[in-house]
Image (cartoon, rainbow, N blue to C red; front, top):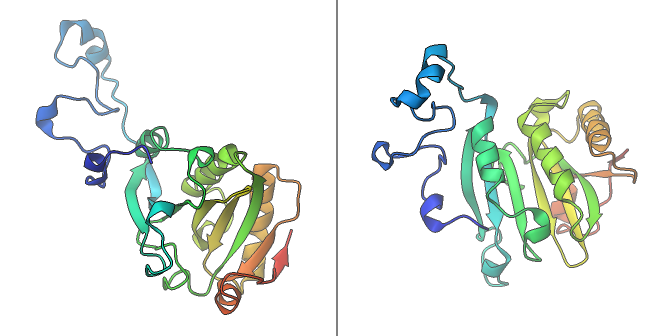
Length: 225
């Protein structure tokens, strides 16, 4: 990940110390200078655009994984963002899926929802999955993120988050939802997502309960679109 350790200590990327002298994106450049007098007279100040929900990026570093480590111990929160400006500031400064190491998992989940089956919000849910050839999921990942934070799904309250998983020959994007048994909601989400990505292949929905029983291998799709 192209984020310095110093930046990682600050959960709000747009928060700066007053003394560092740097302007926020919504501040007027050159405020107090004569050269900015015309802008000041107009009184035009761009305000941050808040999102309906705050979201957290999580990263599961393959270098930190080992057979002896506790499952999920290598998955750590990176940043939480709550405005459109914060999202783009982060997105433009992190590696996209095609640049991630094999074995990496990069998550974007609603704030306070952890990307794991055991999370109370996720426990009774499931996931839709789309598959791409290695290095071909970057745009689909961006479109998915924009749909999430923009609340574009009809059943957006059902959404927990999404994860892109980079493997040897392919990249998978999974969309996690809350109530797997709500077939109407899940089918709506699957159809909207497939349409949004202009994805031609059939996609399937797996219940987390089935994944746990099968140890995430061989679980069958309950719904398909």
